[in-house]
Length: 376
Image (cartoon, helix red, strand yellow):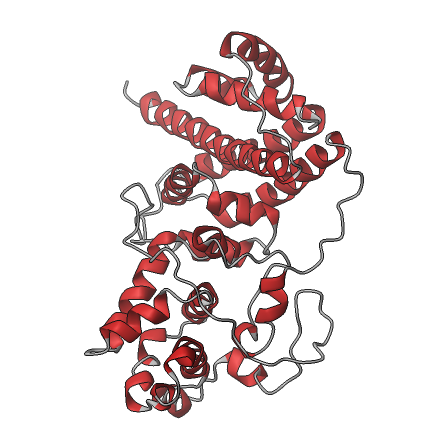
């Protein structure tokens, strides 16, 4: 007599998980819309009133989503907000007639995958969601919009929940990137910008080409004057940054002042990106940093040039394989490229890859990860 209950429960869970996938894509699309409008010089458009958006969005959903997913979406407490996001996307120039069917296909595939594997996949522990995002999405407006969005903690939480239910989050992120890019382009068209303008490399991007960016994915519009924005541009989360800061502090005992100068340097986000990339490749940046104490050539010279010397010495220490890596036959990929011609964001060989670093002005010191940040 109790046989149908587990089946019904599994079906309900499958539909609920599918709605979570829909929420994730819509949150990402909304983040990209806001960012695109801001970059286009337009004040961010406000969400339409819920009482207007709900019936309009409901009519759209019912034509493309299966009834069980539609019901699960519309019965959720956050449905009014989702409806507002959908209508805002339409008003920004996004063709919901094209977007929603693709989102519906993703939702159905997620629902069917969960239903076929009713037993949940156990969580593997603390997930590196920023690393997953960086590995899955290329540098650009979509990835930057996600990491810098106020909704990033909620996006990361949704990614974790989907993973715990056995969903391949990478596939959803790939689809979400394609849709996000479409949102960005649609908003640009409505803002009468025509084709996406060719963005000239920023001053920071051009000055960073060389050893500091060898092997890194650096956007053309790199802005090192804004610490939070720069970290988001290179795909480093606040929690990752705080951890890398602690690594430097622990690697330089008795050199607290110098460690503070290093992590507050204008070029620090590039070093943090290097450390994040090393971890993605299975290397431990913390094993490389003690070189700063063993070889203190950086301490020699005028005080005015101390910060540039520290930055360059740290980058060199990260690029050089440790004894353990050499013994194991490992090579830091970036180090292997260090002697080659440096390629900037435009993929044009730099005529001069001088590592000279500009004078460093004080910036906001990286602090501990915000309490709302995702769990690692």
